[in-house]
Amino acid sequence: MQPQGAGDITFDFTDRTVVVFGGTSGINYGIAEAFGRCGARVVVASRRQPNVDGCARTARGQGVTSVGFAADVRDSAAVNAVFDEVAEQWGAIDVTGIGRGRQLPRRRQSVVGQGFQTVVDIDLFGTFHCCGRVSRIWHGGASVINISAPQASVPMRYQVHVGAAKAGVDQLTRILALEWAAHGIRVNAISPGPIEGTDGLVRLSPDGDPGGATAVEARPARRLGTKGRRRPAGDVPRLVAASYISGAVILVTAAAPSIRQAAIEEAGRAMSGRSAR
Image (tube, rainbow, N blue to C red):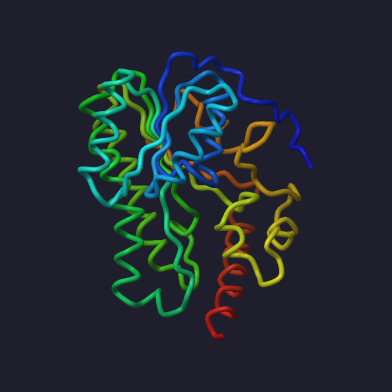
């Protein structure tokens, strides 16, 4: 069901530059695609060169000026190189979306140090590395968008790694918003609930329900969030465009806190059943 009033993003982003880390799939690609439809030059960055090449090629086929860079967000030098190359080619960067994440939804990975460190390195340190270059090459009016998760504030079974990493992302967002406000740089985080067509929805849904029907039933709006890979623009990309918000961690979910808590508990139970096998 299409949500009421869900038109495409209508602002003009012509001749402005958007960089999206983790931009080859899911929510992040939806953000990149939505800005591209508004005229932005779009840069997608992820670990695998074939993936970024494919996404950039698809975007160019839709008339979007786009390039792709291979960079692991755990490598600050690689991240800096992307920003430097983009700044040299196109000048000031207007928006950076940072959404690289890692799910290890198995019981042992909740307590084994290596699995915990992997997720924290990608989600938290990766976000920090991407933000670290911003204040040196950006201009007033620029925007940083970090992707968080409900597990940052609502405990969920076997998600201690994600919860810890995303809680760090939330606080990093708030502090950098304070530090960079005087420079006109906004920093926000988006905490999406169940979004259709994403790996997270598949992994956190009960077996036999990859489409998220259980999550739909748990939500008063009776629909999943949309990532914007097709028209109308998704719920997450529309929020990214907000211009008078900074230091906020914004939930993108059509549910009250009590319902959100129940849905996360249900996802934890589903994961528990998988972990036992």
